[in-house]
Length: 122
Image (cartoon, rainbow, N blue to C red):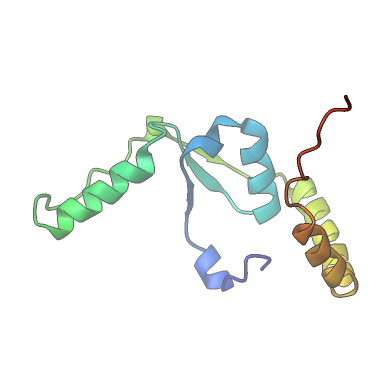
């Protein structure tokens, strides 16, 4: 819901690849926030690029089909129901606060530009 996706879309399998899978904490938070199982591909940090090349090769007729990852390369991480409930509660609070704080959030984002260089006292 927070991502603005149709629940029917979220009924599919969610795959996670790339550098973010190196952090077990980040994967755990993502799975618990989304509240659905996530397939984590551990086989290669470049699995996204490999997949894109394979799809392009299929489009060019170089490959007839793709080779799906083996079970050893994929770990399914399931959400913790209590954690998901906690994150959902926090999100509902955020939804209530955002309209009142929207302008402040935008002002903070604009103020995040780097500080001007300061010269050292002489």
